[in-house]
Length: 93
Length: 300
Image 1 (cartoon, each protein chain N blue to C red):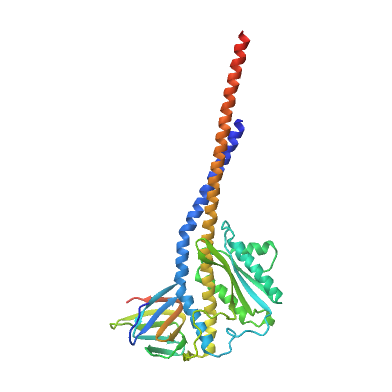
Image 2: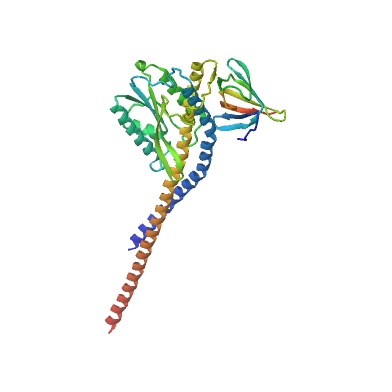
């Protein structure tokens, strides 16, 4: 996992059999059972259940990484965001 | 004498054939260990993340949930045994079964009833041969486990765990599997999955550290409800992968020593055969010399 300096999030997307993506991001948008949630650096510790759907990660340079995460949850603590799902895969394009 | 020569030749042939088989199995296992090890490593982040989340909830929130609270009286415990489908892997399956039997004795001495969940044909065979009951069994694919099997096992266990003890539910879940330490060492390990007791991956917070207060979405109870099956599955999947890697390593070791033994047999029998052949030749020469002597002395 890459070290992030300053205000940034360390994000890893993990599925049952492998780590799908990991790296630095400035914002994470995910859909939980309660609704959409956006996470920026400095977010309070959070543990949420994901509704099946897309997770969007804004990485440095303005690019976006999208991932499909079914049946999972999201945890945030100390600017480390972990998205854990049984089946998770990156969406190309 | 000629008969003995033939017997040795036969024995050498049979040892050579066996060696070919054991050598092939050894090479197959050797090539599969790598893959199995990689799968164990690849599943690491997931189980780490899940365990960390569970530990975080358990440590940072004071919520009563069956995941974290120990029942007052434990009536029944579930034991999941991970063995292999095929034999010829040394003490692999029997090590797990032996550890499970020791655990059974311990649980019985604590006055608990034990129900078994068996994974792998060898453990099923062990139980059916002794006419012992098993709650549920899974066979096939122990050398290349898939996550769906882990999910099935997890679902069955969670269903039992949530059921009250009076209706046949269990209060404790133990798993017994061979942990992969290295190519030459696999250790049978007994782990209590539920209720949670060991907090892994999260250090005990010191006094001066302000505990981060976790926010939960939707509710603490709901999050724990959702985490419980995920946690069980990930632990079971990890155990299955470890067990598969151990199985390959154990089989490689067993087959290597079998091949070595075949080599020794072949060498010993070849020496004996050479000996037999030599003494046959010596005897034939002695007979010819003796016959010629007799003929020449008869002429005189």
